[in-house]
Length: 165
Picture 1 (cartoon, rainbow, N blue to C red):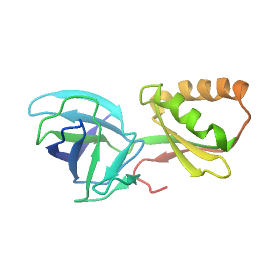
Picture 2 (picture 1 turned 60 degrees about the vertical axis):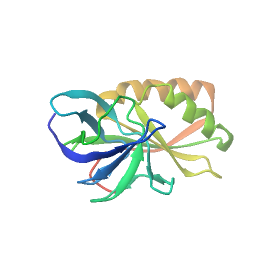
Picture 3 (picture 1 turned 180 degrees about the vertical axis):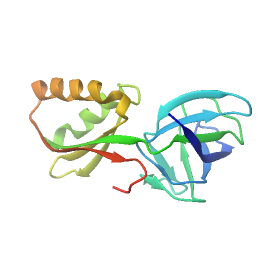
């Protein structure tokens, strides 16, 4: 898999978040890796970003400034790279609206394998976005989840992480 620069760290915040300036569109669900001056530190799936006002951001554009928790120590001027033309699984489903928070917690416990987006909380419409590396695990997770709670899969497709959704 090839990577290219997507953002740079401009400030390390006291609470562990980093403020980054985006050099190329960066979207939730993309595979990213962190580089300090000479080495690659870690690889992860981007699961959450906020704008400077604290609102969630799903797609950050060129020169936009956003914050997130990198889960590794980064220095100022560290580079964040993203995978090139990576396709991600987008799985939309309907669950009991009261179970959205529970599902969010379960996915968080899967250590960044997937991201949950709530599309319509009143209807229980959610989207799971996962890297292609974790498709089997996510399918297994959803199968197990279906034994625990009622759910209906509405759509399942692979979408380039560079496309807007």
